[in-house]
Length: 436
Image (tube, rainbow, N blue to C red; front, side):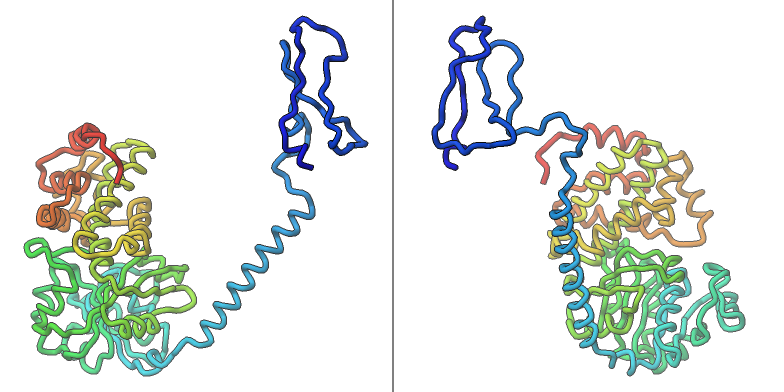
């Protein structure tokens, strides 16, 4: 068999030689092949002989596996899947349910689309649980209590019977085991200061709000304890690719809860996770919050690209650059790179930048189409956090000495100091440097 590994050559000394019997080289140790003679390569003028190692012209697909190899491949896949299923079932059998059993009341601060969707989700987890929504709009409050609909955001989705609404903070917060904070970031400080006297110092706050406070550059993990004047207020950030409408429709969704308190993160995971909502845990609060805030700004940039009809190539390049900028800043602030490639980072960025259900992307599309920002915002009944967050992002970038060309361009457009067309020209003219 060693002879088969050696190169086989036959030389013709005369290029014009036409005999059918050129000089041959004999290998006495070569095994005999009864069906077909060994084809030997020749070094002579004219068309080279076909190689014995390459497939010849045939109607058969060279990538098609033999029946035996197909069966082996399927067996490997089946065994791997069965192992995964057994591991999953074993894990679920050990999962605790005591948090859900102990929880008697959850309060939701805010009556917007995502707050309403999460209120419905938690209420469906346990029929005996009281879910109280603290809303400021009396009409929404009556709609929820009398008809079990949030007429403003989900007029066609009936809420569970155990969801109620009130405009009285003391009533809503009394006896609550968990609090879901769904108030927009820019209004959170004043709102929380107004209800602080009714908040139990041990009440865990699960923040659904994504963004940065414009004047102070604070994240929700800083805003909530400072506004409540309680640095020990338990805090959890909930983030990930999740549109409120799809949560209401109980479509498969995956999110992450982040807290420096590992036990608290697992408790919230147990409270929220179900057959259609997967909840992962993380201790990287900074990474999760920064990714959630900056993806809104990047979504505006993605919308501008779509509104200007710049094509798919530019969209992909823009989002890739934006992901890098978010990673640069998050890691400088103490976040982990792995967080930025996870659900709260890449997952949320992909959803927000490529799907038109995103409020922030719709703002960008309209800007790219030539509309003025003031007209766009005045026509919306929901808050696009990316508009106000853009300026805060640039201040943070300067503080941590991070270059963020795409997100800086968005901030300039928000300030009406740069047109989308001019921004594209400037970005395409940036120095072409090594990718990092």
